[in-house]
Image 1: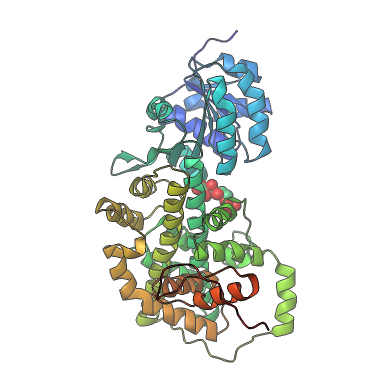
Image 2: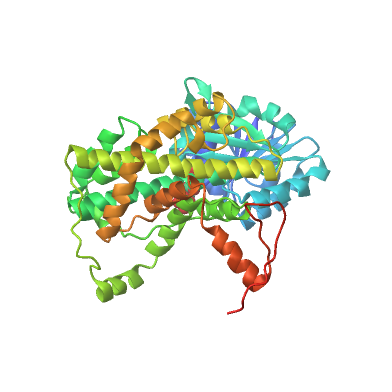
Length: 475
Ligand code: 6PG
């Protein structure tokens, strides 16, 4: 029987699980039990990190794993979302007791987390859905952590999670965000915003590459310069790194050799499904997810290119001089504000729908470091919420000023790209959302008339109270 020496245990020694376990041992100073279906991987994590070996306890079975844990136990699952989580839960739950905590730290669909938490609650074991953002490096050295579940359980987890989280101005980028699936929901929206951010960067890259004709190193320099101002962010920084990287085999730009088919494990897609279910138009996030879908049909696109060729004769009016680049930079800043406003509108509506009372300003605060969308921009969002209640980020004074300053740049960029036949679906969606959102008199009055004509769905009138059905002439 093993001694109960481990402060917590991590099940799943994949990239993220191993990194998180090492972070708990290294930055947390905790003794960490390591569990994995393939036992050798657990021993491998210890043997590959001799400097931390004294705090790493590889285990041979689930029974052995649980037997090493101090009580009340804390078990962190880091396995692929979906059935693997249910399978691991079925394995470990029978060995846990009243008061123990089981954390799902993977990219779970928050609906699954709500179900699992309700399933486990009667046993007296606490189930926690926890979003972890920052990729492998973040998991190892300091992720942004979004915790859901019972707040009382958060008080027990705080001493474990604060030491391993990313820090911004010395404050930990981890917090309890709300009950049941709140943590995983916030992570899902983080990923939807991440997709939008990455897509808009790719669209500007497409303009610089295809309309201006720049080489990867020239574009790397531009992104590195933009990273010194409003666009300062991890994603802009790594875009410059990816563009500058040379292929060791050919000596050419590696980015030019990468196949243009984007993968997606699902979280971005979930974010737009949930936005739609909440009736929120997260159109820029939707465009980003759709763009990944279109990119994955590479053979079809090659055939379509043969059929249609270059569909426009319009010369691309983009230039890499100071004004030309400033226009693209301001267009990206403006579209980014709009995309984040959509993500935040989804968070706000979910908070109302699920009675979570999400701390929207706090969410921006813990996203300022460690996570994939970390940026100076999130500090502005934090301050906007600190300044008072925000109906929508587009109404926040610090953002309205920037949009007023940059919306013409976005408009010209989208218009010129359209005329040049360069696809900018996310930038276009951001502009259209802005124009739609700021229009006091829209056009869905016609939609309401159509719906009432063919479906008697009724409509309201501007000039009087009530709900009306009109006897329309039939087509
Ligand atoms: C993060 C990232 C990460 C990402 C996966 C899968 O916050 O660390 O968002 O969780 O979701 O690397 O990426 P895709 O969703 O693009 O497949």
